[in-house]
Length: 329
Image 1: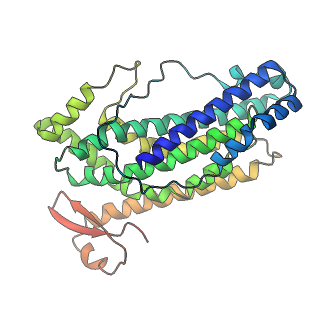
Image 2: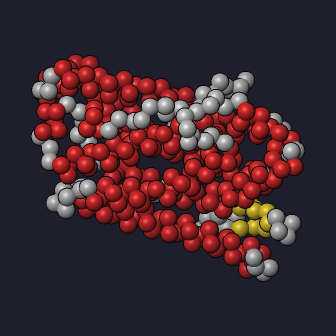
Image 3: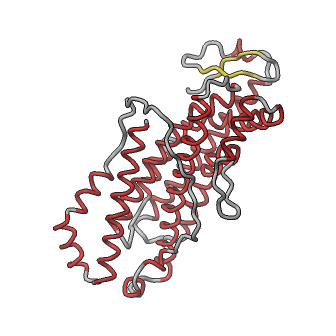
């Protein structure tokens, strides 16, 4: 996984450098033919195409010995708007609705990268350190930590694809619906996280209150964080909540993009289907989560669900028993 993330960070750098190159082309000369000719000579499109078609990474890498130096994400400057980066000739050729549409797409790409950076910091600064400490973790916190690397790799992959298409198609991005559609098909991996993350946050608060080994370690890790801009909170609890917050934002982001897309736009029907797909996926997750909560309150559920095939273990703190729940159908 560490090898995969290091490769992804290099891909981020490549995509950003090519995007900067294309921005400079537009600022120097707004001639599309000249831009494409320079891209052909530099091979930028070919390099980014190789990045954009990556569907998976090799996770069978050896662990890296020694702690890594991790710096927290620090957006000290307000991110510029799309219209602030594009030359006036390009904007004059677009109607106001398309300018607004490009602003929404730009915001989706920017916030997806910011989210991936936050989860990467959570994984490298907190999760790895706590797991390597040898401290026995409470059950829900342990289960939450297990799923976070998968969530991290999923959103790093999505962010990379968004950055690639932004660099290739800059400054006008025709569509990102296909990338978000692939993301929505992976929402089921959030099942375990949604079941455990609230209890995990309570377990961290309890460890702080008791000031046990886990609580002391969390306090020490938070003390190592450099002061960020006002309103920027990077505590363990706040970072553990971010996947849930991001998951809830996707319907709003897609609906905003849909409203900014004209009905006769070729991307309109894809966005309608995408919004329905995300809505159904999140509704199913909520139903599954509610099902798990009902099962925990039912004394008979070990007998009722004993015939399921693939099962995961979950510990009920209220009754101090280890029950078995179906985490996949």
